[in-house]
Image (cartoon, rainbow, N blue to C red):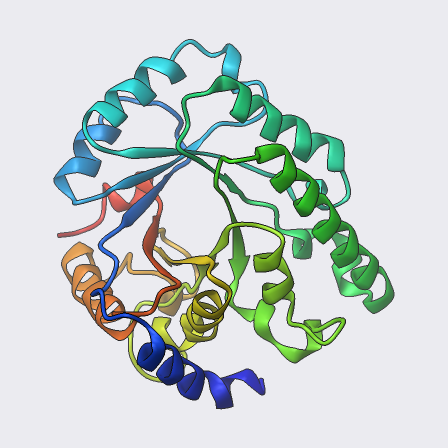
Length: 273
């Protein structure tokens, strides 16, 4: 965990070099339910600016997508297409074909790829993992090329900055950023400050994004999961809002900071106040 020793220094350097512009006010929300009733109203009531809308392969044949996107954008929301599967790390055509479908649809403001190769069995074997990572990066580059001028972000775990996943002298998250427009770092914790807090887990990525001129969105969790510290489910929405304000303050002025992303609508909308 060498990077934890240098994160504070990196963040401090980036803050000093960045033009003070205040923290990003962008608030994204994952919507795995697809274009369902109530999402737009809830989003606008909570200050959400971006919807990460599930749009799996074949979505373009579903007549509900176009009017939903039109309504959301009419309310000032940006709508991003979301899909992905761990197998896409090996299956370039599946990733590229979906990207082409999104671009061809012509209504989305951006693309979010949720491809998590560490969910595959190959990840547990060091040799197979090395090949898997290489294929993942190649497929990501191909998908980004297919996206053209449409911005593409990819979801990444906070631990992709560890030295054990470093290749060619670069961390895996750095190579991922270089291959796309930015990342959503899943810094899933229920507190902003201190060791193992959201700022600590995402600080390296925000600093790196600032250096590389890439967007880094900080993801948080609201679902009911087995490990309490990774989610705001128990604390409720008011407590989460207070912690996210601290995150914004910590990253104020950092050029790479692209706001927060809340995972996800179904649990967020049912959280305690």
